[in-house]
Length: 157
Image (cartoon, rainbow, N blue to C red; front, side, top):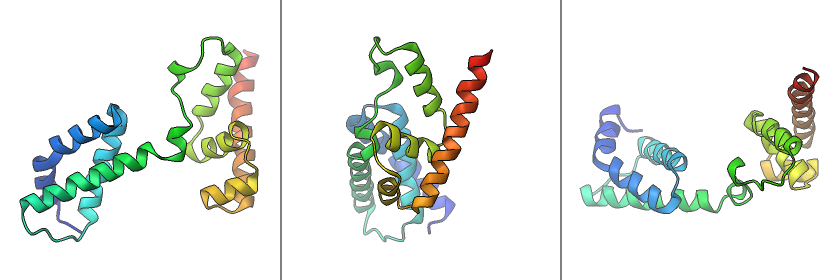
């Protein structure tokens, strides 16, 4: 693990390079910020020794490009669209439900998405996420309860 001084010095030296590489690959500020943090966290936790500044810079470039490629080929990224990209003909109530699903905490949103939108069974979701099947059932039940509260409570008003 590197010292705070080493990490801060590396951020000063390579921040622009990492951000530019991310923007070229991802074309998205939010994802760029995520990868930026990931790259410098890897550096902070790395014990790699560098022969020179050029070797260190090459390491940053390689890690950044790999992280961008991993993000671009990830399962969830390939199957998602932003709310703005949804078709206009989608009914208002469907959009309302989708917004409620997207507002769930990550652990619930993942299982709801895989179950209801991708039609995976609980055992399949357990294998995909590396979780016990009973945990998946529990997460689905808790997510349904939260959705009932969000959708039912506002619908009564």
